[in-house]
Length: 606
Image (cartoon, rainbow, N blue to C red):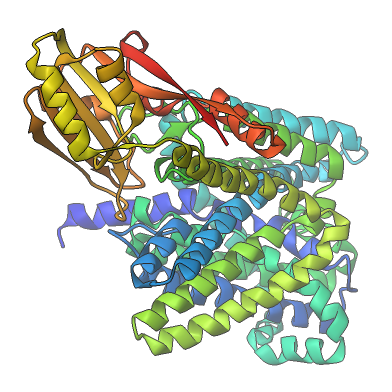
């Protein structure tokens, strides 16, 4: 390996710290404080909590994601969508296929559910550190909330312009952050090295044996140390497996030093249980506390940015795989078309984040509601991975995956106890995209079942007769269709009823492939003046159809598409019709010039 390649690889590791580890990297700010709301910080309980934190990070993050999940990829890509795509070829029955698809839908929705709480809890927990600055101890809660909401507004407002220019600084900033975690924790570890004995699982087992009910409740809060771990797998395609694993080695050591350092600090400062993270740094370096607080705020902003980008990316995949309605998408980077902005989703997320801030009011109360969706997503990942390893006959990994999945499931069940304390909010938020996915997919099936397509051979026979008459409109026209073997009724209506046949007519089909990346196109003649352009695109690709047309020297004059008018007496399908009306249609989604578009109205009763 050359020096340049080594430097490039190390830079990818640094980049992973900014892209992947922001969420889990900021968990030490609030995790210990939330756990200590339920137990007194005695020497015994501190050791037991540290043991639970260590083994939770080991099982849920290191084993389930760093080892097992990252070993499953498609062209280097990871995530829930990839797991579903990897599993589908092995499935035979329609029911099991539908069930796996449903798991994918739920996994995506759960990610969005807790994705709204992530910026709220991260930013608010950092802003609350202001209360330890001399002279600001009595800062009103409303002031802290307004500051947090202002930071959130600034974060969401810059999304439209893109964060490419400042994103390069995220990695180095997070390197400083993790060193700060390690330094603060390491200092108190040296003062009380005996806390390292808490690496033993016996302390966690002892706590569970002595206080089974309290231990079960606390699991939901211990999970906070692993939230964000799913990003190891979801972002693998952007950075590669090796840089992410190297980044996790560095990040996990810093995180454990922070947690164990907080535990050591609490042994001599049990009165700091309300906010051990900030109290630790305030006691360690009082003169540098404000710079540390500012670093904390920046780190939480980076963590929030990673979550926002992740939600945009996942929803774009859902749009391209036709399980989610189209939204207006803007590309915020000239270099990377994967950097996208969806305005309506962006401001929906912002409204939800601000609502969470003011509904809960404190990071501790937010944390009491946080984790339910994360645990659910982890459980789904465990189930899907176990099935894949079973079909691949990798039985050792299957066995470990089942254990990790059951562990996630136990945490998930524990998190259900959070529902009365606000955990229902993440479920409510997650239910919105899930409802849209179910409504959209089922509505599309009903919609296209209401239209009777024309058999390809019958269409060609009639087309060739009409074309031979010689009455052609000058230029080239495109006609978009879902399936070239069944010609949509709007095309026959345009050509045969309205008599609009161009000199050159091209039927265009666009299909997502099972692969994450790669775009292929094939232009084949169907008859005189009629061609078929078949485009296949990876579900993670941002497809540029116009570029493909230009590469094939196609200069269209007009683009025809079916414009459905949905009529229904059912409230559910009226909602579906509304979603279809406010969403950009298929051709608008791909940013074709509006002056070329002609929608052919079709009435559908569902």
